[in-house]
Every structure is written in C-alpha cells, then in structure tokens.
Length: 140
Image (cartoon, rainbow, N blue to C red; front, side, top):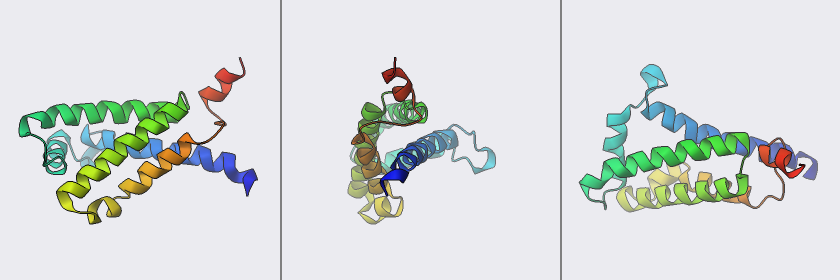
C-alpha cells in the first residue's frame, strides 16, 4: 500500500486545488453559463454567514475568494504545501462550521465540507511532497 502513497498525496493535492479553483472560477464567471456569478455568491455568502452583519458580507466574500485562489495555486504547484494545507483545512473547517450554524449539519455533510477540510489536514501531515516545488527546492 505504501508504494501508492506518493500518487495518493499528489492526487489529493490536485483534488483540493480543483475544489478551490473551480469554486473561484464559478463565482468569477469563468465557467460560462454554468457559473454561479459574483452576485449569487454574495447572496450565498450572506446565508452561510447568517451570524455576520450584512455589511461585512462583501469583505468576507472577497477574503474567502482571495484565500481560496492563493491556496489553490500553492497546492497546485506544491509550494509551502504543509502551510497551505493547514490553511486550507482551517478555511474549509470554518466554512463547514458556518454552514452548520446557518443551515444545520446536513448541508456541510452533503457538500463534503468536513471531508475536504480533513483531507487538507491529512495532507499537512505528510513528510515529503513528490512532484512539487517543495521537493525541488529541498534538493537545492
């Protein structure tokens, strides 16, 4: 089983990257007719963060979008992977907890928000990251 671990770790990095980049692409309209769009994202962010004042929602949405973009790129290239995966785990855990508070536990379970968060946490526990900038830089 150990011989497939490098592939599994790499594929987990790509899966996490895909989740972040797809979500950002959708809200920015890059998925064309399948995009959610920024206004729909703001409305959803308001529902998810029902505990936050309405005037904070745009800042929350922009901050989330920046972090998701940055973390997606860091994970894609495998740069600062441990730090990026810890941050990704925390970001998605906060998202899952906000969803739980606002909608109940079913929605974050249906959207696999807890699984995404724990997958990112698991990635942070790995000793080395094959096929990454981290690996290339560690050899110099």
